[in-house]
Image 1 (cartoon, protein in one colour):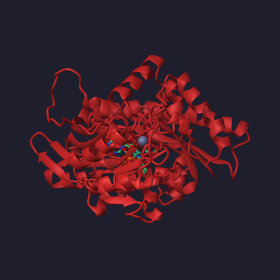
Image 2 (spheres, protein in one colour; image 1 turned 180 degrees about the horizontal axis):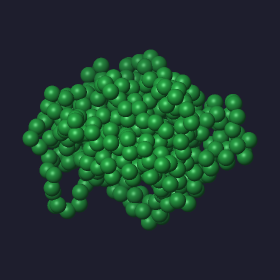
Image 3 (tube, rainbow, N blue to C red; image 1 turned 180 degrees about the vertical axis):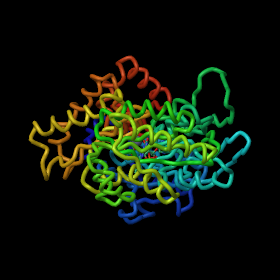
Image 4 (spheres, rainbow, N blue to C red; image 1 turned 60 degrees about the vertical axis):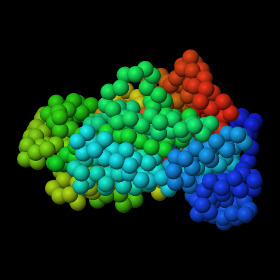
Length: 494
Ligand code: FAD
Ligand code: MLT
Ligand code: ZN
């Protein structure tokens, strides 16, 4: 069930009316307005994709979705909403996993999908300037002939938008190599909650002229304004990429392995991703990637996917082969086996196992997703303790919680604890929360490493942020959005 928001906890906001719709019709063409209100009268089914999140866990009741094509149109819409106190939900690809991208009630949805132009690319500096609605995959495709890559890669790349990525400060599979968006985003264009356009769209690597305002919008989850344009530093495309799936006899080997892999691969290491055995089995069950041979999987408690990216294939392969030999020869060996990609198809297939985990969990059942930062040596403990806790509560059985699995970005200290249930129920949620958050608090971790707070974790912010920090977040929110129209009920409890 969606976390119910008492309507009294939302600011006094108004619903969209037919008169508002008439005003929007003076800003946008009819094709950019979806509304179940007259005179537009779109069938309700057309609004469903905008009202329900990717997991089908959070549900809004918006009557109206607007699809502006320019920053001026966004500005005019938001100005009107602010004057009329209409809540606004900025929506990108709607792949968010914390319920931030759908309304909690009947707020207006502003969908950025029609803003999908690449504004400029400089192949000397690598700076790409694009509209917020550009799909991540389309930016990657655009960069291929320019020999560059986006410094960000997510399993949702075919649907998520760069504006959504920036607004969630998405992490993903390349963070280990290229760092977070707080480093690679150079500039932003934002429509503030009063409709004013804040132009921070510079392309400078260095700019120490006081407060770096753009940082506030990176990870703000649409609560401070609508991101409409992004300037991002892209990276030179690696000319040699390789990957290997390592099967480990025990989780205890992951950390010594990470140390050894870093030591031997150093500058060519570009990903080190962890998958526990149960997660792997679900990926295979749901057809994500090609399963490894039985002999390679036998006795494996978990897997690590290592990727290298460099410029000299021979050199990189030599390094990777030497690493594998050393790992196999060590006494006792840190790994059971290693399956190295020998073709681009195998390279993609190994990645598909890792990238397909999210989808596998969703196909298997209803996943409760805890995206947490904890010390690396606690990854397995967190998964096992949670499973044991659910067992003691009598909830670990068919028809209730069916799987407790872990996977994630070891290099970033980010564990994805997934509790897959037959249904979302208040009983399971009560068993998991605050249990998981207390566990994270105990290890001084973060309750959200990369997915954000959305509507799912507003009540748990205090496990990762102290009272003074939360107070200042509230003050900042109020300063930008005194009427509380911008993505109400998200990030901060109201
Ligand atoms: P949405 O889901 O539409 O929105 C997310 C939030 O950003 C909402 O609060 C919304 O209001 C706000 N927002 C969206 N666009 C704008 C805008 N232009 N201006 C202001 N606010 C805006 N996340 C990771 O961090 N790492 C991963 O590896 C990863 N893998 C994923 C794999 C799969 C299969 C799926 C389904 C999700 C994954 N995610 C991952 C989560 C999600 O894809 C990311 O959070 C992504 O950045 C969201 O982008 P989006 O365009 O879909 O945003
Ligand atoms: C991932 O790393 O696969 C993503 O963050 C999505 C998820 O947690 O399932
Ligand atoms: Zn992730």
